[in-house]
Image (cartoon, rainbow, N blue to C red; front, top):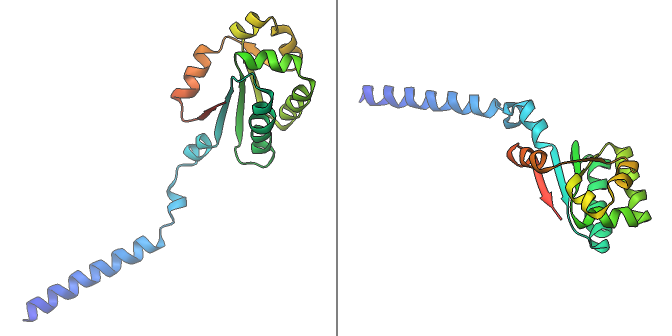
Length: 149
């Protein structure tokens, strides 16, 4: 009987000790800071030529996400029909300038922009026009969050 009580006391003290250790741990302190930083990176891939989608979703979310700190690092990729729309729409161009001022990285697919004949116009807007296939692939393979519109 004494042995059983002794064993129960030992098991209880071990369990009590472990509970105190776990209670002191803060899950947030365990996270690696580089992981948190990587998870704060967003890539917005804009492909739509629809002006309403651009104004009411893509530009609105991207701009506010950076302005209000929802994401620390944002890359904005202009691809396909969106490059033509941006080259023609001055309201979107004005918003794009504000996005750049907020620190959003602006990129465009050179193959698409050349096809639409708008590479120079996008460059003048402050967009880094380059071949994006490899760049986008690297973004997707990384831990960055990629969303497409």
